[in-house]
Length: 482
Image (cartoon, rainbow, N blue to C red; front, side, top):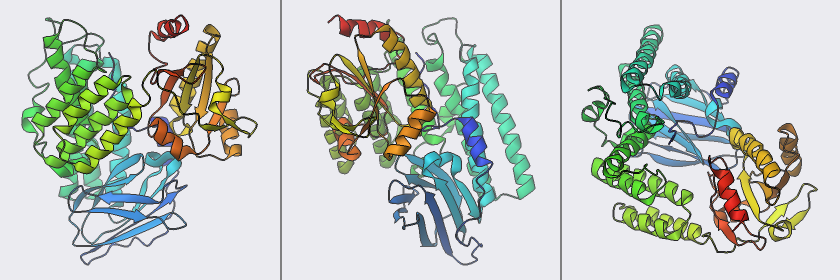
């Protein structure tokens, strides 16, 4: 029943702390504070794979900044409003604070975007505090999991203890660095919002179902934050704690409603659960930008997870009654069409691969029997290592099935081989996608780890199998004996 909602897109806390301790490199641009109304934002992206970053506040500012040949970008603003803004790079985003007249520099490496994002210049202390807070939040998110099966009262107490300690650290930083009141309000709200996130995810993380257990009593304050919060402010999207909170709250409310309605366990991947989530987004959010944003995130995630066209079509229709963003609606329709084309019984495209000898081969040449194709990226190293360990075990148990690893990174041959050697992936059948962008579009792989089962002729049997599913062996036996 566990469903984790984390701030992280990929990385581990240990790695973050290690890298953050060594990244304070003098920045390329002058970051002296400007006393006029002109605000300067500049930065450098190391190892860029895309040619741009986006600076936005989701209201008045949305600038796509092109990187030069060295990965540098810069922007100038007149009368920029003080507050939280977002910087995003394909697959990544982070919050930062800026005030009118600032000269703020930032630097990040795409190999570990969040870990290496560092600030210099005006309000760099504030922004580096935000990064440290982000890391601490991720660490506590994992640490609090050990209380997930305790009573609501015990869980609530531990969440409050973490929040109090965090607020104390903020007060100490304010006394030391004299942070502006406006920034302090933002930081305090991030801390509070994360504590609410922890409370909202508790019922789903719990190994039982607290809503079906008459002996479970929630303290009065457990969900009282819902009455105190004004969620209909577009700029909340610039707060890195807001999206996880909203997702956890929507999930929790939907989970409770279906728990009360049904006698069976709630299937978090079902059409009915996700339909309920969409309905809650629609009823909770009146801000059009926020409603469109969270509804689109919901339908994207659902499409990536589902295995049949019927459910995808049903939820897309529900989504289209909510969303008013025509551009996004068209994108979702195209995405759904792509996934539906990968329905069981459909043929998988016969795309090109690079093999371990640096030769170009066709997928159909390599698939001789019932096969599991598992796609991986070293950008998500934990997943890459974990999936290879799982496959190694499954391959021994089910020699009737071919397990084929396909790397989707844009790496040169030598770099790809280094990754395989360094992570002990030599014992598995490994290939790399050739012509990555076109294949990603055909298989909808972007930002998603994916595995699928195909027959010897590339007929799709299961377009989205979870190799970590606790009953995966039963599932695989079913495919062998079909």
